[in-house]
Image 1 (spheres, rainbow, N blue to C red):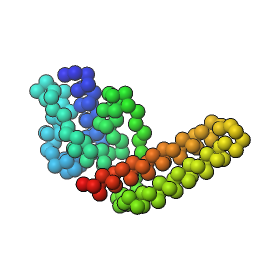
Image 2: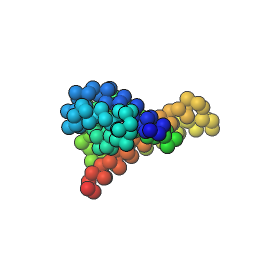
Image 3: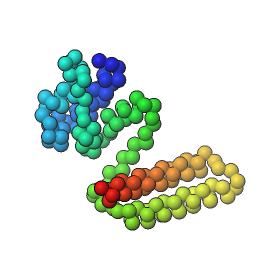
Image 4: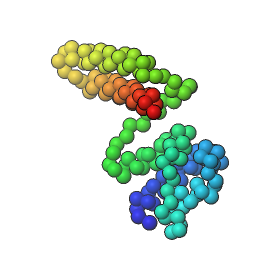
Length: 152
């Protein structure tokens, strides 16, 4: 098995074990044996990998996206983990996203104005600007997902 396959199987195993094998079976509708084959390093299972829809369902329940993170690392992509877990499902729509986008952009501009008042952006000011930029990016991602839902 290639080193990439081994790497993905290790992260698949970490995902299943973090969620719990019984819970993973319920979430995915797969048996313990099937889930085990996805991360088995036995030669007869070398070409078996967990389907992406199954990964997505498990990672929605896991505290950390093990497989997604591993795939990104293999492509030398850096991800920012958004650990926002609201008490309710994301029930917004594009209209509420536009309002949130406007509010978040106003916060970014406010931070920017404070940062440039003296003509120098300090390290702490840059960190605050970066934090606001990341929050703005999260709103855009939510908006993108809502647009995709509405267009389907």
